[in-house]
Length: 331
Image (cartoon, rainbow, N blue to C red; front, top):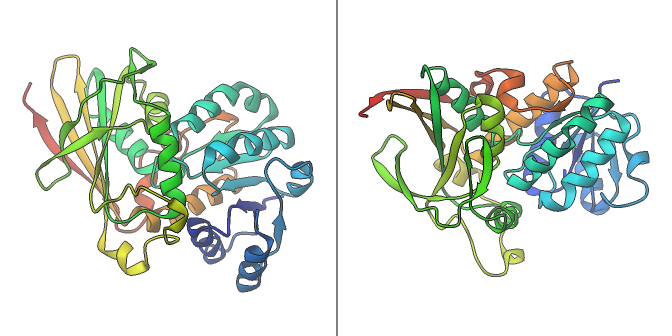
């Protein structure tokens, strides 16, 4: 049995994921909460569909015959836990594309239970956190005794309606950093300057899932996260009035970047940038590749991170992705 279920397939990113799964030749089922939209997409793709709510009594029945679930339905604060628990009960591997830190913390807490069931929990197989997770492991290898890690994302262009809602969950989680291996509240964290390759820009502190994944992937004790937003990427007001997401032309015009800096015990700092296609174009390709590999037997029970399981070069499997290493920064 090697069948994928894509939950949230009728959404903006979910539709692109489902179409990519068809291109990749996977055996898959689409699913979600809107039967009418699912029926139309299923007809387009020639794929079966299942209409169910994550809190419904029939969730276990809806997962019959499935070996991997890829959750694309946000906000993930509402969908991740019931789907993770259903996957654990059924021994199904769970993947998702969230950036919401509390979902990663949940996966950590459920890791032992999942391991006993033979289930892998791997949130973050999209733009966040695959590129930054691989970048963190890549740059850590350049430092003899790494002590601190700073990661900054550059969010360019407009956001999808779903991402805007999820962004509210990220902001609502509060500011955190990792200190001596533990997550601690950091309400007074201040903006800092980062260079994505075109000169320093101001980046605001924000608690992304990397505060969890980077710790598991690198074991660096002190980790902080930041974001640089351009083009009014964090919308306000009635989010239901937003369009589904940026057009193909908009995505083409806005590549994605992230930067990581690691400081060693001797005070020396190294920096690297990862550049790739727009996050909304990147996510369907890398998420389906993660699903394909998991279906093919690349999995391990419990909570796992993409870079640790699939390797430090996993992010670069998407065409147009490159890592740029910079010289050591002054002490």
